[in-house]
Length: 116
Image (cartoon, rainbow, N blue to C red; front, side, top):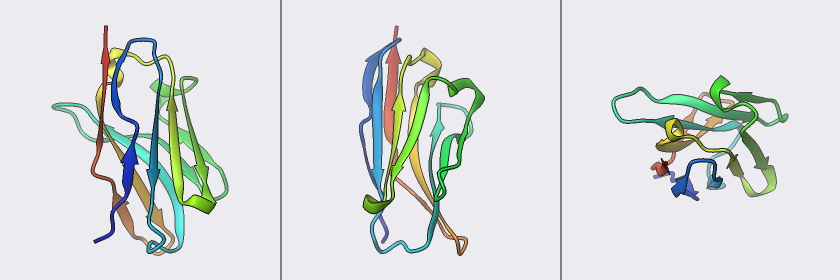
């Protein structure tokens, strides 16, 4: 079973920062994009940020200017630097990998909790 390894979640005060990372195994071939989604209690999972092989990034409007997604292609790793965190950023964050052949993989999720 393919497993994405996530790390970096935790508890932080509003205004603080966290950095998430996710590494995909080399058994996943032809990765075309990597990204982060989140799901808050009672809400649907939503895209937070995504980055393609070519470096094109997409962000949810509410995180623009606060979150930065980056990627180390050599390590099959994607990062999400989250600054100026707000209470509404509290959610379980999931790493996502897309392949050129239509495959899609998810991490197990990491909790991010922002306190006042």
